[in-house]
Length: 156
Image (tube, rainbow, N blue to C red):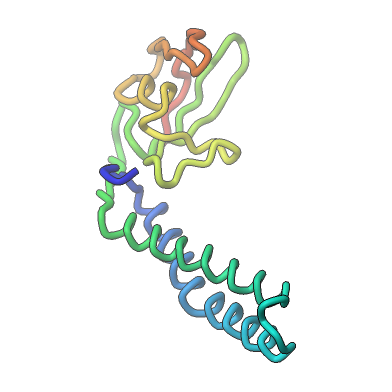
C-alpha cells in the first residue's frame, strides 16, 4: 500500500484522530509501565512478560505510524447534503436477489464490512458509485460471480 491514495470521510478522519490520540497518550503509557514492571522480574532474556510487552509496544508503534501516514496522505471528502447519486459517505439500501442490504460507501482506510462500511474501491462499492435510486447495477465478486443490485434508497 505504498502508493495508496487514501480517501476518508469526515467521520473516518475523526475516528482515526481519536484512535491516534488514545494510542499516543494512554496506551503508550500503559505499555511503558508493563515493560517497566516486567524488567523488575529480573533476567529479560527468559522473561515472557517482558517479551509480550515489547511485542505489544512494537505493534502499537506500527499502528501509530500507519495512522499518521494515512492522515497525512488522505483526501477528506465531504458528502454532498443533497444528491440523487451515490457518493463516498452515502448510505445505500439495495435489493440483492430479494434480500435488502444496507451499505455505507467509505474510503478503503475506513472500510469495515462487518459494520456495513464498504470501500469505494471494492467491486460492490465501485459499482454503486454514481448510481441513482431505481438503478440496477452489476458488480463482479471475488469468485467471478455477478452480483446484481437495485438501488432502493440513498441517504447522505
